[in-house]
Image (cartoon, rainbow, N blue to C red):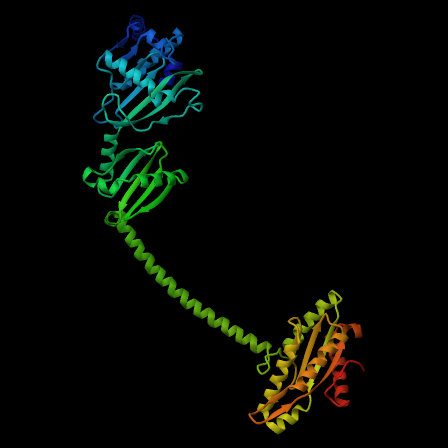
Length: 478
């Protein structure tokens, strides 16, 4: 309204009379201008000489001053409706750079006018409103200070009044600590303590009465810790002993609100009871989830165990733990495709245990099983991780060696044959037997072919040649 009145001054008999009175009073050290006691609050000001001695005050532009006086009189009209006993704010001010002010609580005498104006010009709510100090022309809150009329601790919010690029003055509103305290005590009578801190972290008001102050007071170390945390996070929580402190930086007030509760106060309050119910509900659901998780875990574990068992049975020979016939040829085909793609040699070895039927007939099938497991273990010790080995028949084994030339595979086959012939197998505490094997080899490099069936046929033919030539030998050529 004040800015509108500055831009659109109202010319009336009352305003013209006020301007005449101002010209009559402006030389006095302190004065009070009351153009219409029924409609306006008085303007209180100082002399021209006082204004000239105190920059940034300015009375140099008379047309501008006339507009401002008219606007201030219009603004003062609403101040008469202020009720200090009912309103939350203590006082509403307009402080002019032209050497006067108007207040919802006007000064009692001229000396109080002079003292008040001098003090107003030194307060941050006036000095911080200069364009160089507040280029964005935002409202600002002061830190806690003692009121000039013995109101006790208070804070003030102010906003600059500008029109047509000129800074006329400051609108300010005062709030006393006692009224904020009463409001907090009424709003939060029993649930812990609410503390309101200004931007300098000074206590402005507390919701608790003096008998409960010990629960809400913070030590110097606790306050320093809080200051550090509040700088880092505008919203947060902290536990100090048995007390819980939560804070939030306020949006409309340049300060911080703290909530301080002991564990007992928190549980006794409505929020605490709700928290207990939620906690119990959470515990029940957590227990149910845990039971469900255990049930599902056991079910999945059994399914995985069954899957591993089925996979083992489907792909591995239970006696030798080597690949069975189906799994061996399936993997062998995939491995040969890979070798053919990169033109790497691959060699296939067929191994047959010599005179295995005689072992079964002479020593029994248990001895035959021991012999097969013995041969499988010896073969695995001679192979690489990339090699394949499988039991494809009763006493028949097949090996596939990727990236291996024929002459290299012959060396592997000879080591297997030699180790098998050299290591005796104990079939009982008193009896040991020696085993031997015949081996046939076929290589993709030698045959110029990567077909597993063709390599198997060649290796099988050479295996029988080894048997015909006396067994216990390796055959790699026709």
